[in-house]
Image 1 (cartoon, rainbow, N blue to C red):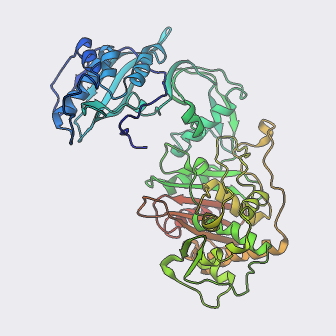
Image 2 (image 1 turned 45 degrees about the vertical axis):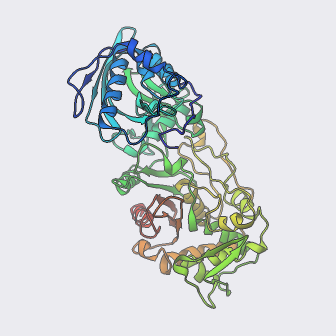
Image 3 (image 1 turned 90 degrees about the horizontal axis):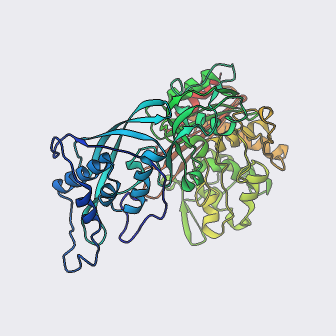
Length: 557
């Protein structure tokens, strides 16, 4: 959703929040050296109603620099003074702002606040926060950077701060709150498979993973809680499977220990592969067991590798091919149609660059990733065939994986007509992430589904998900040959060059509305290691995600 709300739209959530303040320091172009606004003036202006302004022409057009700086200055000065009403009146959502700012002292126990504004960039004004967090006899300094955006208020066009919880702290989402007190759960010391400690400083990608491990295992790992300032997630954030986050530790708790399946050498290699690639994610699994050997995200704010929900493009053809072979609608060495176009359900589908393969086999179509070779079989399929194949053979789309941290377990909804056809090539409503697609390759390599896990089920006695059946030996042999041929001579050949050994792969590109480039996907296996990766807006999977996955398979040796 845009950060600017449409006319008349109001937030209905009431985040709890942060608190006491006193006098704003402002610096940068367009601001005076020091300014102070009283609560009375701010309150009077904020109380102005639309009806009171009814005969006046609403302000419109781009904001002037003076409007941006004055509005930001007014808001920051009032916030720092502790004038919640005045600060809230300077926003376009006074109710939500009042709730969040009122809680600044009460819940988060933040005091002695100094706000320093930076140089505006258009309608955006950065600012820094320096304060103290106090709990009983313990106090620690708090410092962070944030930003606000000035918009025209709906109705009268007056400049106001566009209110979002992130204005108060960049880690907050709307509906979240900040709380200082005894940690909800004790800290945990996560260990790799060799017993060495895992830290976010050593492995930046694992920050969200460590948060998830603490949330699940903190109370049962044997530790005691400390005192901390943390983000407590609201309903919307929890629905997105975001974990609570510690921002400042006032006193240490006693950590318990949780051993993971991560391989330190492979994790380090994965971190290196995604470094500098903000939208790249990758996962490595042991195919025979489902153990997660490495997980890394180039953008560390969200664990796309485990929780992403993205169309997987042509990597989905691994699942579709297994279904077509089982239903005798395709066979590796038999002739199979790959026309330039195929229409179904009112949609006209085509191949990349509108290629066609005349008198080619299914093996050739799979290796070259021919879309129409799969779409052409849609008339022979029931609406739920692909959904059942994903669930029954590959263990996907059942929302029952128990990995040890939050995950999205893939979704292959039942669809009809054109969307059903699109789902055969990983578009339509199909959604996956690298963990899901690494598991698909692992299932092909091992011959059966093994639910991925980061923490062994023996640690807490949990039950792992299972699939209801396996592929026939004939189907499995053909599927392995298709992936092997693709790695050796198909679209994955360039990326897989030098990987060697018993290897197979499949590339994918997924079109996304509003993106200039598609998301690039790659899933593969070598020996007993399976991996998958995605680079959002990366273009062809062979050129973006492929080199990342292939490099890690080489590291896996």
